[in-house]
Image (cartoon, rainbow, N blue to C red; front, side, top):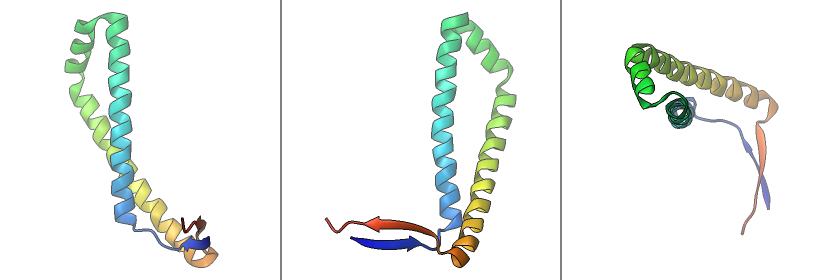
Length: 96
C-alpha cells in the first residue's frame, strides 16, 4: 500500500463534471415529481402546468446549472490554494 496526496485538481474539468452530475440528478427529481403530480392531479393537469410555466422552468434550470458550474469552479480554486499550503487530501492506494 502507498499513501498519496491530491495536491491539485483541474477546476474546469471538475466544474464540468459536477455540472453534469447535477443535471442528471435534476432530471431524476423532475421526472419523479412529474410522476407524483400525474398520480395526484391527472396527466392533463401536469401537461397544462408544464406548458404554462416552461419559460420559468427553463430559466430556473439554466440559472441552477450556471450556479453549480461557478460554485464548483470556485471550490476547486480554493482547494488548490489550500492544498498548496496544507498538503491536500490523503488517499491510500492498494497494489492489488
